[in-house]
Image 1 (cartoon, rainbow, N blue to C red):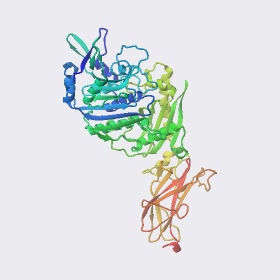
Image 2 (tube, one colour):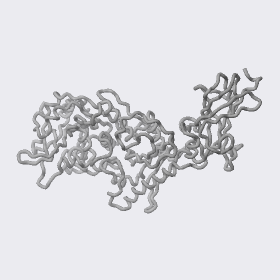
Image 3 (cartoon, one colour):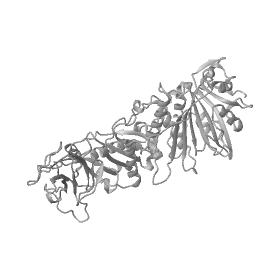
Image 4 (tube, one colour):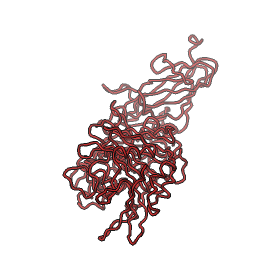
Length: 609
């Protein structure tokens, strides 16, 4: 095969942007470089979505390269191009998207033909081009620098099926951001391209159609069919900062999950807006999901509340949905959904080196614009109880999407008002974070009229959290912070029950309290009776609920891991040997203060076995 032609960009007489300047456009992001790469790459994939495509399908693969296969492509390239190192590349990170439009349109940046697309020149030639995607994720065109920065040689290739005018075209091109240098009396910016030199003006263009597919095959890529659209980007010898390939694959998968989970959700039976597969040398790496990671699940549930526009009665004490507004000038800023949930043990994660998202506890609000790509996770307030977390999702008002987009830095991971020219827009961005902080602090403060408990937390802690101490069964009204022994009934042989720390149940068919207990006795069966009632403002217990109100009741008894049927409402019989451990689930109203007790007594003689 004929080697690729090489082109190095010379400085123009009026000045040019050196390669080092291009590389510095991203600044020094706080995020892990791999996370910046994945955010920018998949954001580009989403912005390129075809209007007729239901889903954008993305494949991220770390694969091996054969230097002997690719080396001849660079045989005619000078040493200043970086070709000697590129020829020895042994690994490639491939990011391929389908259901997208590809890098189509004009081939030259100075071409001003009518309404032609400019995707190709904006990606491979221009720097800092403003967005042309309505309500897209990108804004500056600098994020693509992350792709070059992820390569040890700062070199990438692009293979794309696209439209040029009305005809389908396949394109292949390599590009590098090296260092500026001088050779033969000319200074060069350090920007390099490989493709085919045009015969009439010696400007580099991409290899086209059959030739493009042929060169792509040298890098292990399949050809584009005549009617296939999309883009495949290859990052030569990716730099994972010392991670093994497997750990790099896991990091990529977790970055995908935490930055793009809204696009990966299956909403109301519809397919996800985006699918992402990750593989290392052909071995599949699972991407965490709302189903596999409860922390992501909490954000997904808050997102569902946001999209539904209402809070289900069953979770009303633990959720909130509200509009965030600016008073002067008057403007709806967006909508915020908040959800309390039991703290989840931290899973083993390779992502701890990235400070940009929840590491252990989830006490954050996920900030979204209209594309619903994660901007950042905002930690506002500590939860009052060590085992209660909250997750929130804020979505910017569609009318303000461009305002917030313009406030983002090149990495799109924050909203910074200071750079906005319009003082009203600066106010909107500043007030938004203030309103979110105010709403979260109200949300995590005690809620009058609700009592619940969280697994592993004393009822005193949870009562402080949710607003009212749970009166103890003896009527003293003090906090319960340890198991309470139950007195036996006079005239019967000794039987007792102790209660452990109840657990708040937010999932499943019933929402309420799981109350663990341990029954003690001798050689006779023990009757265990649940007493549960709503506490009135006077301190007494409600005898009958108001019309339409839910009465606290046992909906599930478990002994030794097995469900047990009630003998009568709120009563089960426990047979020897003792002690016996179990739990009872108590369903109660959404805004009730609850008093729960268990009473144990030996079964009457005539009923004993």
